[in-house]
Image 1 (tube, rainbow, N blue to C red):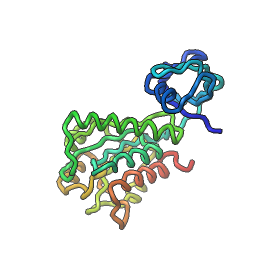
Image 2 (tube, rainbow, N blue to C red):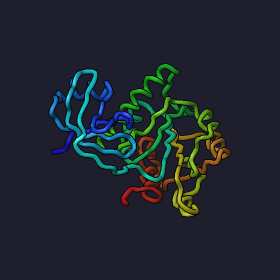
Image 3 (cartoon, rainbow, N blue to C red):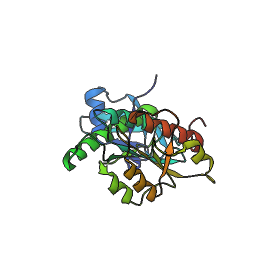
Image 4 (cartoon, rainbow, N blue to C red):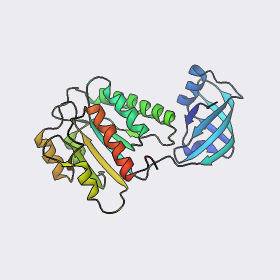
Length: 249
């Protein structure tokens, strides 16, 4: 029988004792109805995995004893940032779930010329908290020890002006762009990081692609078919993980 899996911070582990935060404790107590003596699984975000016997469970705190532990890194050697144009409805939730399962390291929702959704600062922060919870649940489901960071939405110009971009920078575009295969075949040596720009419904404007290109992003195409925005991100992450990361290894 598989055990319920929970996330903790590395500092929550003290010898054979493991302490869970209020959010995880509340989930144990209210939703799963776990009680002292139940066995669970925990990961600490740095590759540590634990089998734990619960000793105390309340709505606000939980403590357990570590019965077994090991270190099995579940993270790819390629740290991928997905800068995703915010789509309509709940599509971004599905993108976050799939991208987390595929090993993305960071997700940055971006506002572009053709973004339909309008988010003020407060609403954007609220959405980001919800998106982060979705990433956490997806990480639990797929057995990742590390939860990818989901940042508050920002404008494309603000994102492009930042310095934290990957060694490989790709901007998916259906216009005049090189094939992804040609781009990847021309790479020299292993890469540690990559950043991918995906437009919302309607894609990027030509001016936005030019701005991205000026910041070192290579316009690239996934092939002859135009993919939906909710398909494009997970698709390119899967390709990058297969070619440069750990998918299928």
